[in-house]
Image 1 (cartoon, rainbow, N blue to C red):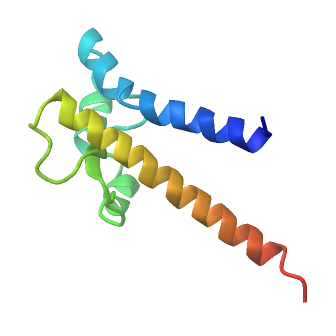
Image 2 (cartoon, rainbow, N blue to C red):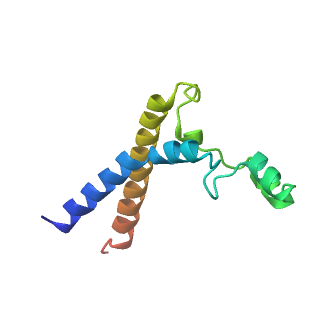
Image 3 (cartoon, one colour):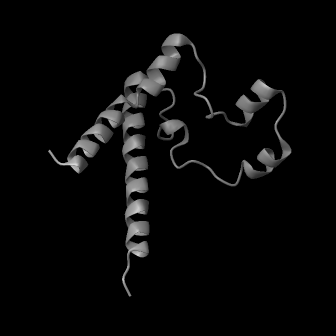
Length: 110
C-alpha cells in the first residue's frame, strides 16, 4: 500500500473520530476545548477581555461557527456529529487545496 493511501486512510479515520470533540466534553462535563474560547469564555476564565483581542474579534468569523450549520445547535448529538464530520471534510479540503496551489506556485519552472 502506498504511503499516500495510508495517509488518506488515517485522515479518514480522524474525520470519523472528530465527533469525539462533542461527546467527550459532554460526558466528562469538561466545557470548551483548550484554545477554543470566544470572548465570553476568555472573560469568564481571565476576568477581562484583552483590549487588542477585543478589537480583532470582529475581524474574522468562522465559516462554520462551532463546527455546525446555522440553526443546528439544538438538533441533538447525532446531527451535531454529522456537522462535525462535514466540518472536518471542508477544513481538510481547504488545507489540501491551499497546499496544492502553493506547491504549484513554488515549483513553477520558468
